[in-house]
Amino acid sequence: MSPAAEIGSVTEKGVTAVIVSYFTGPVLARAIEALCRQSDVIQIILVDNGNWPGALDECSSGEAANGRLEIITGHGNVGFATACNIGARAARGEWLVFVNPDAVMPDGGVGRLIRDTLSVSPPAVMGAMLVDPDGKEQRGSRRRALTPGSAFVEMTKLYRLAPNHPYFKRFNLHEEKAPDEVVAVPVISGACFLVRKADYFAVGGMDEQYFLHVEDVDFCLRFAKAGGGVYFNPHVRVLHYKGSSRVNPMQVEMRKATSINRFFRAHFSDAYPAPFLWLVTGILWGAFAMKALARGIVRAPSIISLRIRKGRRGLQRAAALLGRRSSR
Image (cartoon, rainbow, N blue to C red):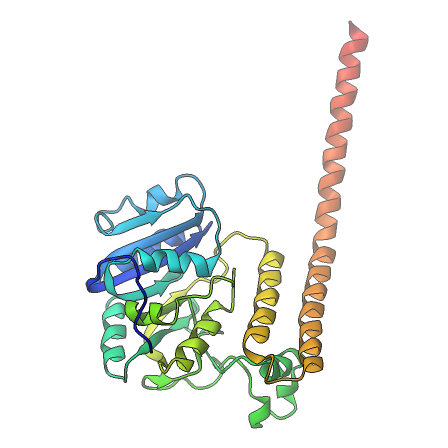
């Protein structure tokens, strides 16, 4: 890797935790509390892309957060990748741990991530195991390389024809037996990972052209191309409450499709024939259209009912107004 560019902050021993929040809800306070219990964390940076009034006051009210929690706000919703870089630039710690606002770090988890990262060849990025509330490994916790070919297999469900064939392997690995020790993988989740600050900026941090989704896949690919190692740590189990942010799910799906297509154009335009890339793009947007249509059909009765109720209330108000006028 090339030396890190100027990163705009004095580096100290210890870890800076970076959290990007967008209307996350009550679990945000729990995520911060868990980071406050990590003895290696010297600084917690909360990058506020948008939250309800009073939500940030609740997060900073705890005694453990006092002096360690710093909130960066006022920039609006700049997207996940840009917000990660904003937090990383303000970090004082030698290490960075990125944690989603709906992810709860176990006690001693950050220290274990550091120790295991020091046990492998540098530079390295170390991802934790994400688990659902029922304790099962979460989808996306560890993944194979994302390519137009693997995306085609996933979207068309070709893996059902020959699940053991090397060409028909699934992108996500959570259904396979979890390893007993730290292992190298192509992609870990951006919901929780640790990396040295200098190594993070040596590859330019997150690509800010990704607004939401796939920025972690892109980062892992660029990190590996620069000579770094990407590792999955089964010893650190992070509880991850998915979907805590109250955003329109179809907006999220649209961002995801846009990011995947950008990722393929950036990294695979020369490796795959253009017609195949067009086919994959068409399937992606076709799947998005079907989801949007299905959501519209499901929501149509409630929307119609709401408009009927509003219409009735409007007629009732109009009738009452006419009645008052006629009585004068």
